[in-house]
Length: 148
Ligand code: FES
Image (cartoon, rainbow, N blue to C red; front, top):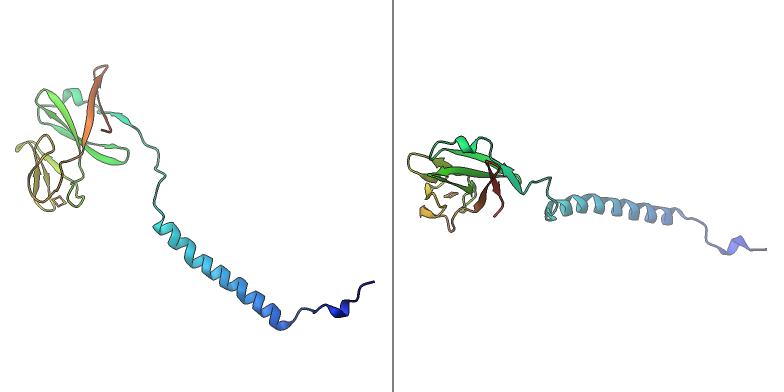
């Protein structure tokens, strides 16, 4: 037979200490988890495609362009004479979206007046690097763009 009188019973102070510890842990989790979610790098990308057909590209007039979205990123496809070129529409300076100017045969960034030639190279302005090039291929009479 055991003697229950030797075990300490629950005390009000013990209960309050436990209650405060649990509340503290919940508060710490509530503050920490959103912060970690915010700073944790995004590694999972949404559904993406590695290659995309440029509908109607074969009917482009010379120097005509179209902006396509490939893997969530804007890509400008241009019929440069008898070939097609494709470059990222994201300026390498601060990330503004560039536009194709068929009259000047150049990509123009509206943010800081940068100019890129038809090969994506910086002609004028502050960008430190050329536009990212995408691969253009033809199969079955269709024009495809894919990541470089
Ligand atoms: S963001 Fe394009 S030139 Fe600055």
